[in-house]
Length: 354
Ligand SMILES: Cc1cc2nc3c(=O)[nH]c(=O)nc-3n(C[C@H](O)[C@H](O)[C@H](O)COP(=O)(O)O)c2cc1C
Image 1 (cartoon, rainbow, N blue to C red):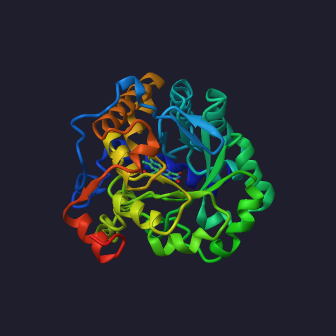
Image 2: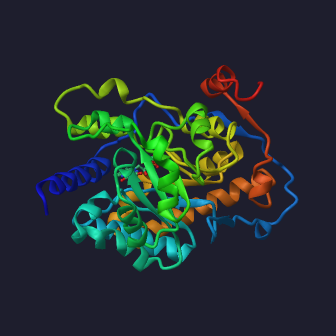
Image 3: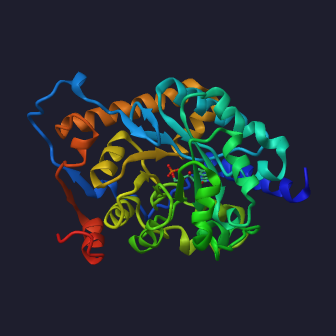
């Protein structure tokens, strides 16, 4: 392994260890799902068995609008995490993302830590992952290799400006990606999603990206895992601290993007229950993704991952029933109220006339 790759591998290991050991959600910032109130339907004209949570997503059927978010690969031991998640989502008919594949492109001896996901989940939706700060310098061959490594159903390109600026070995270089995005979409040969990693996507950014050949957005809003907190723990100074709460709260980001785009939206960043996932869809998301809540279970066994996901699916079913929603299309028409800071946000940004 080259010394540069070994440093990157250490960094990914740090991220996992810090995310396991510490509460990496800033105290004074929330996803704002608590400020979304769904109107209760006291008389739902349906039986539990009528509820259809299934979803067609990038050519495959998901049993519920839920995937596990990108976290790892490229470090010794990360194959256990990806393998356990893969086994669980295969059995449940859900999907997953894998962590940035850059390490495996630099050193093919890491490929197995990602490829295990497809081996354990031959049918599930699996999303490949490359970082914005380097994907636009990659060759067509490298991008295709990332897709083929896991026979990816789609490729996520992660935007992580906050993290790249704060991490000691960061590469805060994003100039040029926007111009090259269509070419990357062509080269990938599978649907491409632009994904944030905890700071959210605004309507202005979504507008700029909407005309591109991407299939959709993975919001990665603020209120869940914060890379300012994670990188703050890796630094020996306090530069990161003012940025702990930086970003667009997930609930707000979903509405920002939906207000300017009809493309697919994956809601992520602080989705902590099936009810949050239901709220995300009422606000305009196509499906939801949860990352860190699955990390600890995934270090233990596929059964622990499965139990968490089954519980979350049950919460989605109950949330749908209590809003009288027979299927996901009905869910999108559910009436809701926005409270507190979220209502302020939406009003000031002119998203709806409240
Ligand atoms: C340990 C860890 C590693 C992560 N690595 C990646 C990554 O390699 N690529 C990526 O796009 N997102 C990565 N993420 C971000 C997640 O996919 C997700 O956007 C973010 O954690 C917010 O979701 P959460 O609040 O449910 O954790 C990582 C998250 C965690 C916790």
